[in-house]
Length: 193
Image 1 (spheres, rainbow, N blue to C red):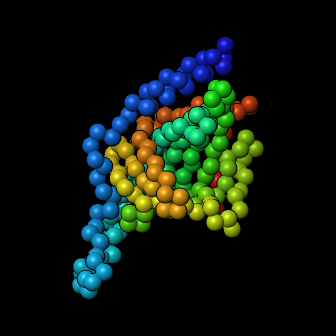
Image 2 (image 1 turned 60 degrees about the horizontal axis):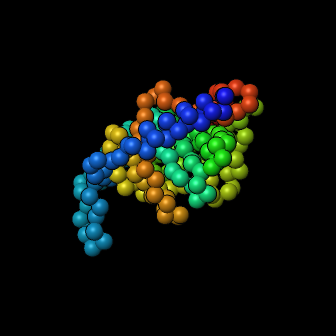
Image 3 (image 1 turned 90 degrees about the vertical axis):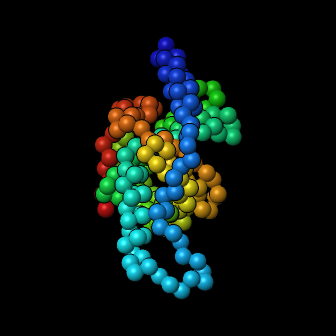
């Protein structure tokens, strides 16, 4: 009965979230005009322009953002990213296989914006026992994305190495993914550096 209820709720969530669409083109998050290679002139205060562009994008990215996609095997992958003003992030993943079984995973790290580049530095996993640190020497723990569009409701970005495109929707601060763990539904974030 519990599994049927979970499956029903997940199905309703998937149907509801599959209905969100970006109805207007997303505005460019890079607010400054790039200089041409042959243009030797510079604005008087180019650093202020870039700081304002990054600052505006950064402020828009604060809070919770939800994404969902169908995997190659037919299952679903959902993720909920919460970015904090202190430069840390937490992303909760929920993977649902075609047979209805689900698993969850949570990761933490640092994030930022520079011009039209969004980046993440993965630092570890959140587990029931606390944080399990990631190896900082692994190159795949550092990701950079080109911001394709960003507004108050949607964020579209593309991974610079894998060329994979993501589109996520802004959600309320009380929005949560169902978490699949055997002991507790939520765990404290034990993340500090």
